[in-house]
Length: 227
Ligand SMILES: C[S@@+](CC[C@H](N)C(=O)[O-])C[C@H]1O[C@@H](n2cnc3c(N)ncnc32)[C@H](O)[C@@H]1O
Image (cartoon, rainbow, N blue to C red; front, top):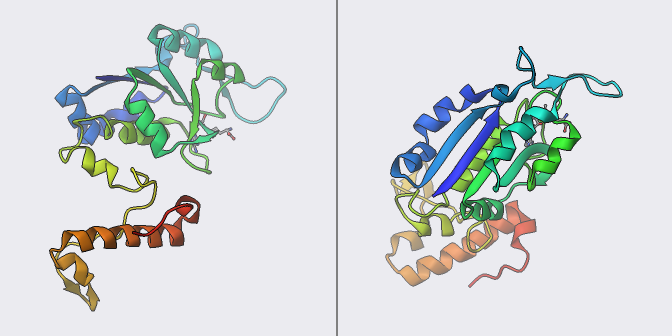
């Protein structure tokens, strides 16, 4: 059982995500628990303030540190993920590692981001890509989805479903895949996939995965050899 806590000033953003997704099914199966916490419960004063102007000037508002310390500390010990475009790029390897933790806390930033002291709460600072979103809710939802589907039992098809995927055990992209019909607008399914010869099919898939990875993500293909 992995306990996941998501802290946000916009907790309602997770309503659809937590009622319709693979995560919802995993929660129902008792594989994980997801708790969304409204940071405003820890806000300051009568107006439950969570933000303020940056010292030294500059545009926009920053998230104050006191509400974050008050919200995160009762959840420790845990892996604490701060969402930030300035973080390290989140990968499948990170998702696999977090799926083995007992408790993971996601901190969703807003406005111009966090007071720098909040980062001392984080065990990891992750970015989902080199672009800036308005808040950490979409990054947190993306990471939670990636983590939960790797928890054993979350996917109906079992561990093979994720091992053979892109960034899985081979570290490469998955090969092109096909379903019915065998021919569509002059585009044919490779004959080998229709042959029923599993050894040939596996060899084709490894070769196709390597070719595709070299073409699209040469950085991942280093060291890969076709079989
Ligand atoms: C508008 S952004 C703040 C951007 C910040 N001023 C900067 O330039 O790095 C507000 C919040 O959205 C989240 N966020 C935005 N883009 C992100 C990304 N690419 N990956 C992860 N989190 C992101 C973070 O939680 C961030 O604190």
